[in-house]
Length: 336
Length: 288
Ligand SMILES: Nc1ncnc2c1ncn2[C@@H]1O[C@H](COP(=O)(O)OP(=O)(O)OP(=O)(O)O)[C@@H](O)[C@H]1O
Ligand SMILES: [Mg+2]
Image 1 (spheres, rainbow over the protein chains, first blue to last red):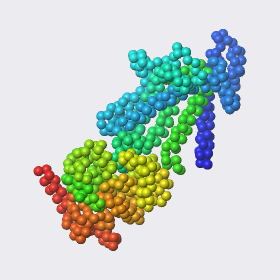
Image 2: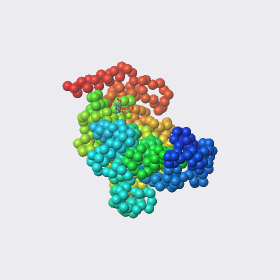
Image 3: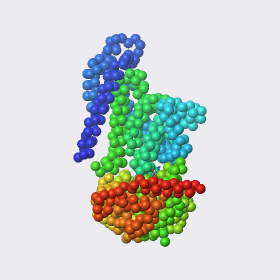
Image 4: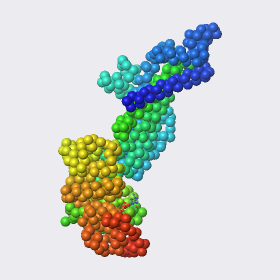
């Protein structure tokens, strides 16, 4: 019963969030100057031509009317047609979403592995130079935003020592035909490790750029929580039982220290997804974010709306996932 | 023969301030020794030094800790840890914080047996059930599947006692194991520790600031002041005629079980300054 109630509340808040995001974007992109129709038509088009096309896309009506029409269509699964490409918005967005998901999840994994192991190491060597060194590295990682890390990585690991690809998602020269848009997963499932390697080579730098600041945040918060836990009585008791410091940190302290970090990672992961917009542009990575920038430049209103809706949906899903993991990991909630 | 012996055990803060001043004490096999003293006397510090869990601020700067005749301090850290884990156990002061909140209770009883002593999991679990039975916990299997927050303080202390006896240690250090509990529960837990200690014939170092419980549980006692041993004797002699003036004052400051509300004399200032002088003289003698 409790679970049903929780789920219903979540569903309601999700819908309200999405509606809010939709309204804001809908209004903002129509208020800022720039006429998509004028940009579509060749020079020399008459005002009558423009008016005809505007009527076709429903742009002659009031914003309120336009919104009602759009919402009604969306509820029927029709997200409209892109003004620039004339393809259904839904197909465009669904086609690009996997690329962004793969990139974000890869970045998240890197951040968790790097930040988490740095926090564990710093806790094991707390009070020594090792901890000091890790703290300094964390501070440096946080001193730049993700896109500047992206630039730095391009310069160092793409240009100076060209170890990784700095553009695109996959090398066309491989000539590999994908059946889905989840390239990495598909290549893994089909055991094409040459393709996997190529995909990773493309994904690594943008993912790393996104991961560096998050890794530092994970490091700082997790280390803080771990160090607090190390004073707890159950830790002392575990020591008297004969456990090594390493197993005490991973087995006794980590499960208790991880919850605050988990909540923060959830929030930060949504920021990371937001960060893909610029990072994908920087690395010419064909994802949703890159498409979003094109859509904004071209004033492709239906496409912008579709992309924003997907991003908003993604954010609420991430938050839901975090809450569920939190409940699963916290014994106090598990039995409540 | 004594199972635990400390010889001239000295512990200092990193800045050099002494916390334990050449403490020598012995706990015989199967014997209960009480360690008495006011708050801050260094009672817990002795237990921590023996168990190898001194806080980072403190450092063992001299003396020996012999366990079954073997000097723990000369062992490499790993072996020392293993030896303590196998032969010594701690019953902590606060049962509410001494169990890991994110782990089930069962594994917290069996973990030492499985991970450190190499028992089979099934054997260890059977043993845990047996022990929970011994500490009078009903439906042990269900309790083992619980998380600590689902159990009362008294239950948790019973579990910690069961866990301490799991590996049949030769020595148990109980650091004020009843202070954090309700008065009614205190008596039960005290009785239980005594019962378990007798059944398993374990040596017990019982830390307390309450002389009232000493006669109920122990055969011998050591009185500590400012990290220095003031008096060391058997319980009967002590209660009949404490030798040291400080011990006498401490006894006078303890409520009698026969007359819990009777008038009490706090330790008089004159005696405090007397014992302070003694400690200072001891320190001066050490420096020379
Ligand atoms: N982590 C620490 N850092 C610095 N000093 C400490 C630390 N722990 C204990 N001390 C000091 O060591 C001395 C002895 O402390 P200890 O805990 O052994 O006292 P105790 O006799 O157990 O007292 P209580 O009855 O309050 O438990 C005290 O003066 C205390 O202030
Ligand atoms: Mg103490």
